[in-house]
Length: 115
Image (cartoon, rainbow, N blue to C red; front, side, top):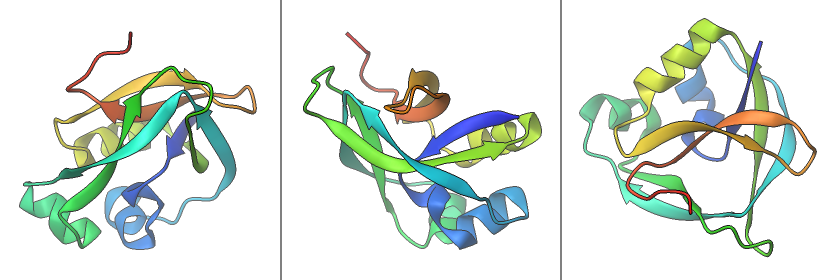
């Protein structure tokens, strides 16, 4: 099983049903060293699934005082690929350690690099 940290539209029931064909269960956790920003989505299919053209996006800061609350879901490798297909090009999937010590996949801003 894969661990996926979600902080945005992948937490929505409609997005989960459309993307994975089921509702996900998870536990709350915190991602340190990041803050949330917002982007405008242009992909009509993603907008139709999420119901909005404004999506949150993670920006790496490296600052201990910055953190993002979200949910860690356990999903299959196939479901991880399905989430990759849902996310638009502005997101990149990378691995990160959460406050709990769990290593999980996150979708962060692909337009900026971690420093």
